Image 1: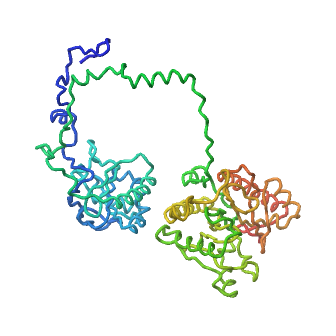
Image 2: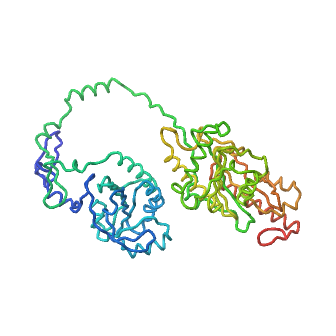
Image 3: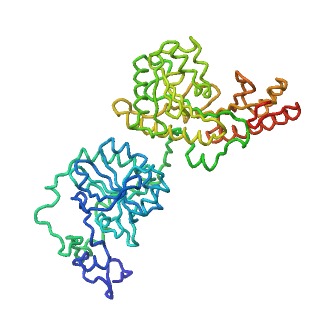
Length: 542
């Protein structure tokens, strides 16, 4: 039909759909090519079609079905093919957390079991934690409207409850990790609101005989539509229009100032792509990256009562447990107040505390080890978390050599995982604000010389040239390069860190630190040549 310029009049000559009595007819559905195999009723009973699958390690094939998981919530992760790793990886990284909440995970794609097995062994190296099913023809995937006409599974999710009822079928435009986290919240809500299967099929309901989607029962009457088309004389509308005319020129909208919430703004991609390590060959013995933080709801570290300190300590023990942390960040928490002086000294003589600059604590009386003070050390001895010191938390990631990017990636991973765990552990009753204490867009802490980021990097490097030269040479270099340089206890080792400005962000701190260290190393090499100092391959003087 064609719409005439005169308002409200239709002209004849339509070539399609002249009959307006039933717009959604069976013929229309067929022409629209809707998925006639879909049984995707939400909520509704699930179909238990057995599928061939391989386990998470890519070894061993077996047939599994939805019915095998009855009694637990099941999340089915559909992904396009073996080139779509990110969507599956987000759920694999949180698999232990899901299973700890009695939620099982399986994945499904169009690829064969043999192809998937090879992919898991080559691309995942045993790190995948989810079994993967094969649905090459899309028979299973089509039941949930997630099979694309081009012959692959769309990235999507199906949530099935303990009774085998489909509670949600969805795709998402969120980032994969955000999607995975949100599913935990969704399942928590679904558990609170049960569905009775008896309420799903009302009496007298009809379906199509072909087994496809039912036609809409809604009918549209052309006469009624045309009669109600003109609303210009509606009295309620006239009231609104008159009021709008009386208002005149509207006042300008007041802009609401929103305070910025600070965050550790080094992402894994930024670290890999934008940052670099010190120059190759620089005699850096070890490097570290440190964050100083306090938790919202606990007040200042120095003003905390004993029971608050113990509460904070127990919270960190829980957060750093295997339920929330990946394998490379799990370890052991040590409360030093339970040790005698000899045990404290022996414990703090470990190399990791020398590398982190904390070996001074081993001296008797240097620290009052009261209840609530302790340290967490991971199993690989390259990550430390101090609890209850000048600041409530101090994160230290470290490594031997010049690989600062590796150190930063571990720190970024630890901070993000701890922030996620805190949001899950804290209840709204115990703390309305979750996370780290901040003020006007800056983190609150007590470390002098470190500003709103609460972040610093440190290098320990061998500088035989400056070790033999006059002390004024070292002071001159420190001032020119805006560095703080402290001589170590032995040899020509020096601890180097930059002098930060109040506007520095994390990326600028790292870039300036590396650039200044490289320049310091070149100055030391010039002094070695000038003073006739010979060094071995490691950079130590002979």
